[in-house]
Each structure stands twice: as structure tokens, then as C-alpha cells.
Amino acid sequence: MTTNQPGAWRVEIRENGRSGSVDYHEGADTIPCYWEFCGGDSMASISIGDTSDWDNCHPWAAGRRQQILERIAAEVVRQKAPTCRALIDEQSGWITIRSCLWK
Image (cartoon, rainbow, N blue to C red; front, side, top):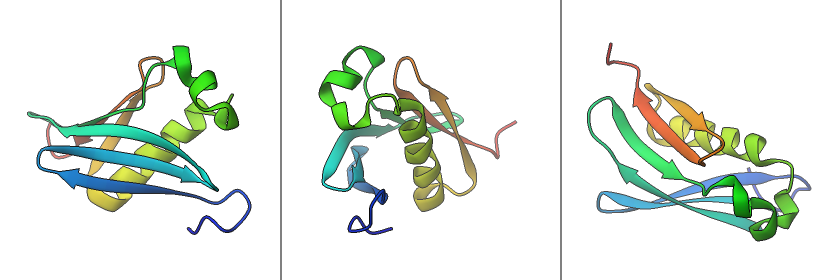
């Protein structure tokens, strides 16, 4: 999805070895996130940041934290891990990408 449309958003994933960034873009605004590979049945973890600073750091996204975390989670799974599922801890701001192949 391009950002020149009203309400358009996109998720950009960058790798740097065993970690990298996941950036959520909406219009001219961006929420930078950090990710790293994990072990076991957890493939990767993405840190969005906790709830305490969300409205101050991202006033344009105030009141939409859960929606944005869900968008990020769905896009990471779609782009990089289609056989996985995302578990969102909204309070702490962590998204864990877990393998669906593990029992």
C-alpha cells in the first residue's frame, strides 16, 4: 500500500544480522520498532515499546495502539513468516512470531 493515499499505511522490515528494524509508516508519520531472532518455537520478537510513552511519542496514533500492533503483526507474518502466527502483548509492546509447525 502506498502512503500517498489518505489513511494508507505500510510496514517496512530491515534485517541487520540477527536483528533489525520494523517501521510502521502511515502518511508522513513513522513508528520505529526493533526486532530480533529468537529460539525454540519463537522465531522473532518485535518491540514496539510499552504503553507509558505511546501517546507522547506518537500523538498522531493516540488511541490506536492495538490496531497498529495488529497491523504490524499481520504484515510481518505476511511478508516474512507465512507459516507462523503472531502473539501480541499490547501492554508491554512485544509481538512474538511463533512457528505453527511446533506442537
